Length: 231
Length: 231
Image 1 (cartoon, rainbow over the protein chains, first blue to last red):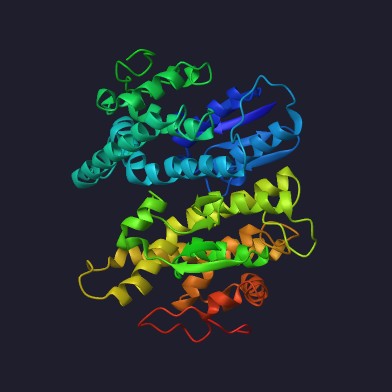
Image 2 (cartoon, rainbow over the protein chains, first blue to last red; image 1 turned 180 degrees about the horizontal axis):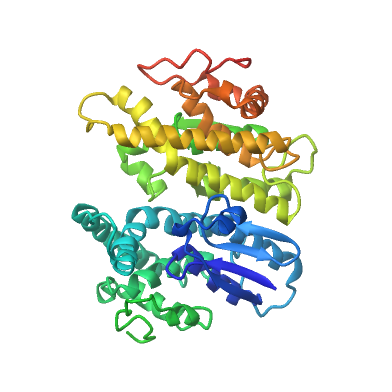
């Protein structure tokens, strides 16, 4: 049985969970908190990062970059049906645009906002005592950066059907991974970004995204709109 | 004419400079300091990050991830000669291992060590006054992390011909991007890591890496071994 080792509030893990469902993979999901540095997990991925995909009898594929490209290659090589989408659709130039945006969300958005906001708004609330005090300055910067990123998504969504072009792609999944986690904490003012909101409503209603909306962080309820499809 | 917009002491830029030479691309190199936030450059890449590859008459490809995959696809589609290496050689599993390590170097090594060390040891020395004071704690952590990464490269290089397996790959180029910049500052104690040193001597002697060894940072000379092939 193939296994995806993931952390529910890791945006990168979430993007791969969406991709696996979109591509029709049959996978057993296992939760792992990488901050625990479990020796068995470090042996599987020396970087001690989620997600990790264990393809039964074939390979251990570590990290969102290697997994997403591996899934795309497998689909191109073996999936001859028309029922599934492509993670990197189109020609080389279109695929480069998808990858630019994947890097934008999993790289820049993560550094600018998601990493800090998830740590401060979700993870520390659950872990509680023993954590160092939060930095108000970092938190304010992350909030300001998040607005900048929402403006950019609003700009893209106003010009294109999906974030990287005409077709749904892994760029949309990467973005959804981040925005769905931030939405759990209720810190996105969607009404200020109508094109982004319309895009997020569309992707949120896909069956591949639904399972994420069932995630619950122990000891912290989601914001009321978290699982609402019409918010 | 194709153009690569890069920054001489950006490890990601360096890895693409190596890849372009290995793949036989004819490219004009243009320097850009992304910290200047030049409007013309931001218009080209909204993330304001190097490297950016402008493929004449076809596309602007932004970021090391999109560029490396674009170059690999172009080589697979159009380069029928045997004279060039492949950036991601082998089957899907081998390619996943290359990508895991590319992410290791351009992601983890950068966050753990290169980013801080390049900023403190090279960039601030050149920019000089007006910069905030360095953090001794961050610098010590980065040095300790660098030793951890050198041990890991030493481990890989002791088991394999090249870092990701039997063949030279973009993982070696990514690693070389980082280690060559750090070497400019003379902060790698190669003799402690003999297998890593042997690997670096081999890649350093390739014609694709030689141009990097000619880079000079205005106002700061390289460490004596920087351009030595037998160090």
